[in-house]
Image (cartoon, rainbow over all chains, first blue to last red):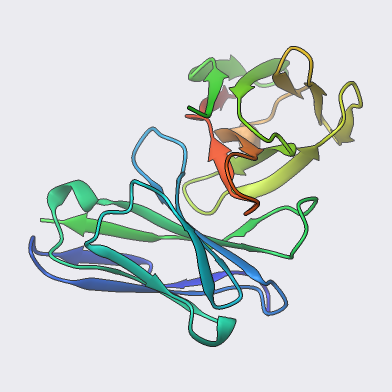
Length: 114
Length: 113
């Protein structure tokens, strides 16, 4: 296990379609985060999992967005009825429990909604 | 509202120059400040700072935190073209005890040969 893995790396979809992204965190990491990054901006927090429990969701996360982490391993982020404003890089990060640890990021999934 | 502000937003220098990147923050429940380097892909971790006044150093890069004045700086000496990237400052804190990061906008550094 060499790091956080995300799939796909790129996704182009038509407006109104549903998309799903996958994140495989570093295996011993309990904490998993999703962030969204638009051009020229820093990543914005979307949601957080501690093992399989989703413990925090940003108010940025509309009801078209849903995330899961079954069995506390990989996570999926689904966007329903995509809009052009959803076009962004979606980054996943994981870390060990403990606030003194850094988060490791995946390569991201770049979503383009046309 | 929690916020992290970086300056400058962009910077162009020549190889060999020294640069200083700034990060100021207003974040509830501050726990630590982190610096990441992003080169068109995943942000890669550089430093984590939790205590005021203690410099972290790695090669030509160094960083220091001032918790009283709520800012941090990242210094890069003898810059090289490979230092060209977006440098992100993030604060671990905010509501809840989740370890989420609140990022600044980033500073885009371009180092010319």
